Length: 119
Image 1: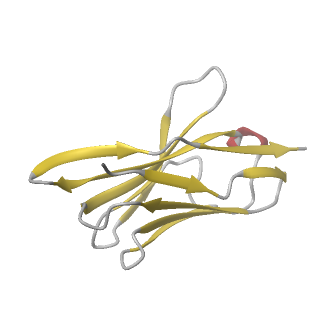
Image 2: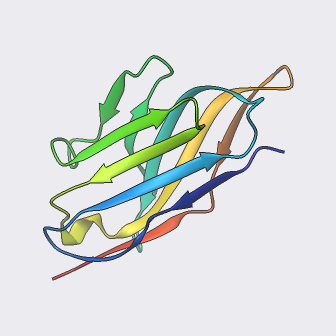
Image 3: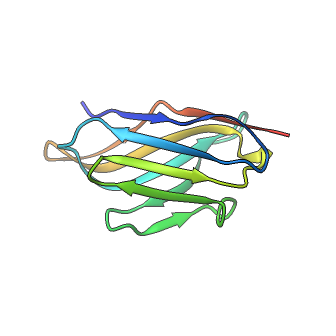
């Protein structure tokens, strides 16, 4: 079974930085696209950033210029560098991966990591 494990969340002051990591447990899972989503209290989950296998990226308008998504295919790891954090970035951040597992197209999500930005 494929598992995604996020780390790097925590408490940070506004204006600060955090780097999230997400490691995919199964190297036989052929990953195409990966993404970070987030869910703030009382709000729906929303996409933050995506990255394709060839490195093409896309960002939500609210994080453009502040967040950077990257991946290390050799380590099966996804990253999200978050700079200039704002109070409204407070949310649970989820890592997702879409790809091919045992001949079938599959999507997997991690359990989430809390990011809290304080004033």
